[in-house]
Length: 97
Image (cartoon, rainbow, N blue to C red; front, side):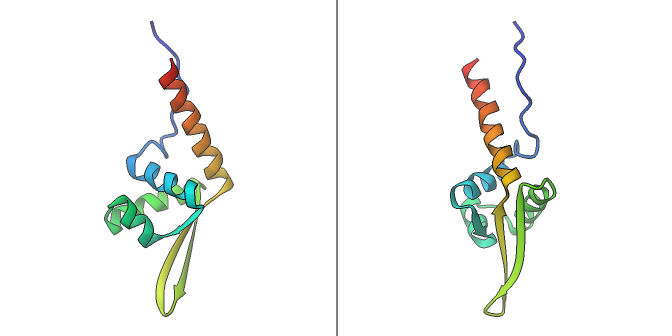
């Protein structure tokens, strides 16, 4: 028997992007270095995945200087919260079928 499931968001259905969003859902905003440490990602890969989340409107990226050092802060957006919640609901639907 074939069951029809809602599609999982391809932006969130990536291990690293999902990890970043999961972290941001719990803290709402975080520095790049924190995300890099928690995900064990390389700086280059993390930068690419953050850009994809930003392009999708799921996070805002603020680049600034703190004590003469560049600082990148990622903040989850209302669209990102909504997309993450929907992703979780759709995933739960897979598990209950």
